Image 1: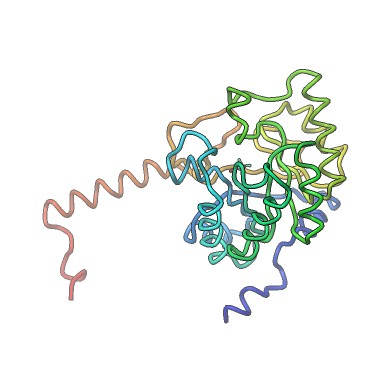
Image 2: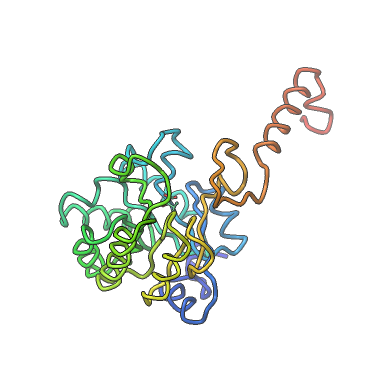
Length: 274
Ligand code: KIV
């Protein structure tokens, strides 16, 4: 299949597909990816949405928070993912301080993510403080996903990665924020680490799909960080995480066996040489 053909597949997931999935009651599956090889695997498996999250900061770069991520880093990761994807909708996070300072800067950041990286949509964190910005980005023709609850770019404001909006005040704010984002034109909203009952209420309140991470089963879809659900990272074990593989052990065993074979002269054998 030519590159042109691959990119023009008729079953490609669009933002409209995702909105329609909420209407028809079909759950939306979303995972992160940050590089070409992982993106090809996740896309071939049939995932609906790939998020190039700024969690790349933790997972790929080894930082403690998502704060250090730059627009250049995110454009690089997103372009790698886009080259590996035929079907899934690819959404890219706008990193910290690439959209908060002025609306003009936000439009430039979102535009670069679409034009230079080839993203299909962008995601921003926050509610009322970004609503006007969201409106302008959507007005420019760029689909936007919102993100409420535990928004990791605000970690220094929160001071903790614990569950958000457990009290009525913060819960009411979050519902208002979700409505404001909907009015501003988002096509979907991530709800991170909030009580199940609140996520249910938000999901019933807004017409756009909610995608939960640590937000219970009532969201319209679920997202996990790929490296966490594959068990690549042994140290991160939040309650919401389900591990579907133990690739840390699988990879450690593979490396150990390779080392053994090299040391004892077993690799390469006769059929592995020219
Ligand atoms: O950066 C990220 O991976 C995210 C998800 C956890 C939703 O924002």
